[in-house]
Image (cartoon, rainbow, N blue to C red):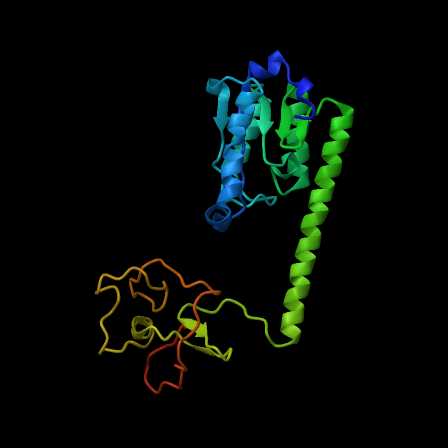
Length: 254
């Protein structure tokens, strides 16, 4: 590994902390290989000379955004451990992305410099007390922040382009879906319609013991906590909402 000579006995006498990160629970579920690779950093720490008993994993922030201002229990614990001098090295899949905020990463690197803690990722070993490593970490952090900015700009531009063509779709209130023509219709699921429209001829999902139906379809419905994804299945047929002369209220009504 690049920079392995920077690891000394003093570092190995202290803990090696693995800090895996994924910004959302969807990433945790779908990007399993990335999560597995991050946990495998414990094996890398052992290969670099840390006893297994000194290798710890702080994974409380898996599925939690790294944006500034978002409470992160794991990152707080990591900073506390570094400041106490208990940590010899922090292992991450990318050290400059330990937090999405470059300022948070810079503060962590400063605490690591003071306590003699190394930052290690697959690219190499960084010693924040070394001026060249500090410059390199700062440069990579700035590039990472710029990358996020460019990605956000592209996503916003794509949304504006879709809106200009009249094709932009935003998440609908629970109980409504897009049909194949792109129109907004009531969910064709009979039980969903029963919850919204109160059809007495259909058994209420809650009474039937169903928990795989959208939540919030009708106030006080007692439905389960599942929610149809905005990118999920579309309506199977043209079940369109028509004017209702009765006193019932549609979705989203107070």
